[in-house]
Length: 238
Ligand code: ADP
Ligand code: MG
Image 1 (cartoon, rainbow, N blue to C red):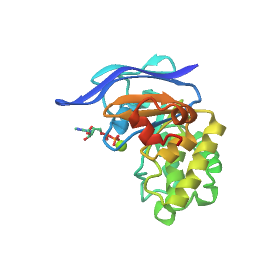
Image 2 (image 1 turned 90 degrees about the vertical axis):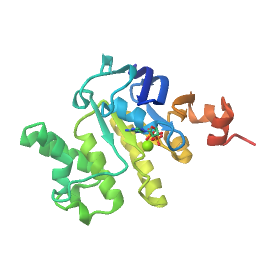
Image 3 (image 1 turned 45 degrees about the vertical axis):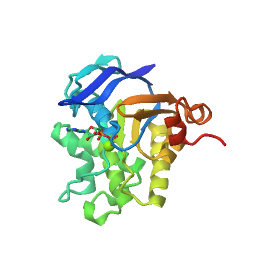
Image 4 (image 1 turned 60 degrees about the vertical axis):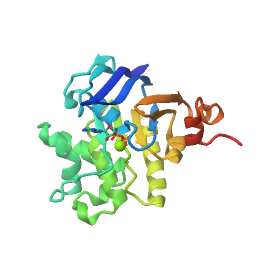
């Protein structure tokens, strides 16, 4: 089942066209990685899917609904950013539940969802702490917890691990992969790190200069890179 489609998506900032007609189908439950060099338009594309940036033209559907001009909160998506801006004066529990409080969900529902998310992310023993008492990895887990409690159809991650050191990054990669296996949600994960792309993706979308160079499984891209750019980025067999 197709969960998300992009049809001829374009984005210009003034005279500068940064996304140049992108078509993409993402299946329900798929883990899709957008990979490409800095400035190629990864964040812009993700922000348009989230509704944080309006498309210049084209159509976005999520779960069969045309959401091209829908409010971010009406799209059934949740986004996790690189700079996981937690509220410093709130506890972990309050941070995770904040979106639900804003939406005026009942207290009992918020508590139940926060506890389930905390268990999933091994944060239960930290629910009363403030963000400054947490490690980088724990803070990133709180940011993911904020996304989980909203039960999104689609998770969007924009380079969520790039502020973490190498060993923590490897650990968080595994945790996100486990989360994907457990929730069976559709995930779109942006990175400029080809190791992350190759190890995490069901499907890799290689972006370059605002367009798609190639779409395929890690093995397809490795075995049959369609362009010299893809070969150089992924690394082809010698
Ligand atoms: P990536 O995430 O792949 O590094 P971005 O999507 O952030 O790339 O940026 C793609 C291009 O669009 C860059 O040239 C960037 O300078 C430009 N850009 C992004 N946001 C804006 C904006 N709000 N106004 C003008 N140009 C922008
Ligand atoms: Mg970016």
